[in-house]
Length: 142
Image (cartoon, rainbow, N blue to C red; front, side):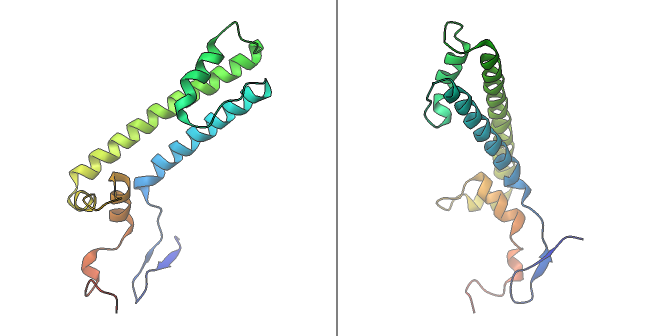
């Protein structure tokens, strides 16, 4: 049985994770972990790489260069890490596109995106996790 979460003043509903943002967040976290693993592998062999996804093409170039000082086994491991990052980047793009399409198709998320700082992921998360607005008597607290 799921846990119960109290939302205040007698409003109580079953706890459920927000599916709108968890898939994208999971993919982004896995991609970051793979990039950091690649950077760590290269660091073991004296190659210092800056943080960020923007440097991945340069890292892939170092890994793909047969004339570099990387041993063959290390080059294979790093190549697998580069392929994993590329796969996760493609999956993240696909999930993000699906979220944007779902957010554009629904009325409430479309309205929420008019607010500064609210994008497709945030709008769907609010729609999914927030209680229906008709449960509140008025817009002000108290």
